[in-house]
Amino acid sequence: MKTLLALVLALASSVGAGAAAPVDDLQALVDAAEPGTVIDLPPGTYRGDITIDKAITLRGSGQAVIEGTGTGTVVTVLAPDVTLEGLVIRNSGDSLDREHAGISVKAPRVRVIDSRLEDVLFGIFLYQAPDSEIRGNTVQSKDLFVARRGDAIRMWESHRTVVEQNVVDGARDLVLWFSDDVTIRGNLVSNGRYGLHFMYSDRATIEENALIDNSVGAFLMYSEGLRLRRNLISGNNGPSGYGVGLKDMDGSRLEDNLLVGNRAGVFLDNSPRSVEQTFEGNLIAYNQIGVLFLPSVRGNAFWNNTFLDNTVQVGVQGGGQFGGNTWTRDGIGNYWSDYAGYDADGDGFGDVPYRLDDLYDYLLDRNPELMLFADTPASRALDLAARAFPVIKPRPKVEDDRPLIEPPAIPDPPVPLPTQSGRDLLAVSTLMLGVATATILSTRHRRSLP
Image (tube, rainbow, N blue to C red; front, side, top):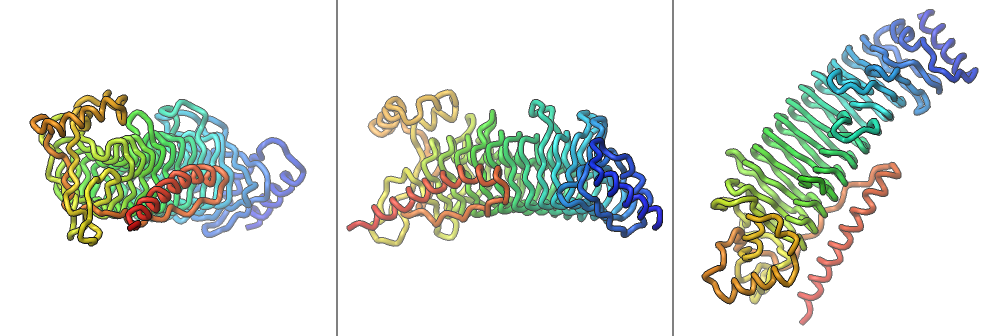
């Protein structure tokens, strides 16, 4: 304990004297600490590339900087029950094959709390670190081409981990491999490749996140029993541009999400494989394509959703016989902004089914380049011709027998995160939601007029 106290005093003295270069004794301080020790670092800059191999707490006040050498991982955790809190961690190496990171964790029950990671390749890398907690952190990647960046948070075989209230900007992905029963809650992920990327990770809860201005919002693969609810997924318009992509998934539930302004709000590829997937209470608005299917996809149920002013409400990518998905559950269909039916008996449901059978949509599914002519006189002329000559009218790809006359209430957006970048990004998406709300209220007002 004397050695530890002497080192703490020495560090405080060197920092207080205004030392410009990182001090070298942080690894010695960690090595001298007994398990269970809480080390409070005074403000200053400390030499990084350290290893923690015992259960200690390393705590700063937001002004203790651990500066890496630029050649490796800044902090490596090899012991369970370690806490890193209130630190600034920066300047990792830049080797993808060596997985240089700001923080690399290889033990269970590790907590990384309220810290800021800057100029790091991978941000927080959990490798066989179950029951960990990653909360309240800000992660910024190195200034590299997006494919050369590391992942802001990467998890491998780290079951039951909680990732909550983090801000990620300009990294590559937030990715999970072989990590079951994980909770991803209240995070803001922007300006990256995949906001979320799941592989072989079952029973995750993904809620109240904002995934904004990425190439893809969330791409979820080879997993079962995922639940996505109350997320804002907006402005994801990369080459794929999916708000949510589901590939080889089973039993997913998407509830009360805001899927706004993406190239495709939802993309479905061989999902589900065998267990039905459900979509309830989602706002799917202002996307180029609301929901995009591969033609072989079956077993999805949609009800009580709002399909609002998507350029194409439902698309099918490629040829083949499409069907086997349902658009009504327990007598409740969906709201379609282009529904032209009526409600003579006033029960809130259209008296004629909603059918999506436009000739232009049919041609667009097989020739995506025709999107250039969306909402032009040319596309309207094709639909008019199909109505005038039913022999060329395609088979409906959507039949909703109980369409809603008025849209359901818009789900509340996630609570804005306490950062300026978070507020700015959420403000833009909230403005889009405001337009959607105004459209819905206007629709209700018009229908209420005598």
